[in-house]
Image (tube, rainbow, N blue to C red; front, side, top):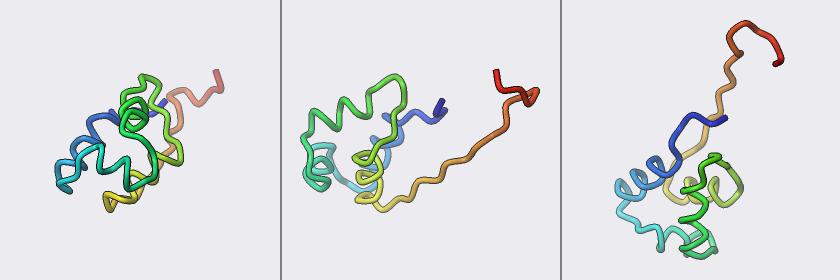
Length: 74
């Protein structure tokens, strides 16, 4: 489970870089509706397009793995 809210993250990064989601979609070679669907997904998927979007906005992605409480594989 990814705990970050991807929709808010992307929207904030777009605002900071003064780029619309449509412009961002064009920068990564996809459609604006696909970008919208990608960042609005409830399961928080991270795929190549998402990585490319953040790269075009000038950001790297760091994944942090945290051991579950109790240390079991349930």
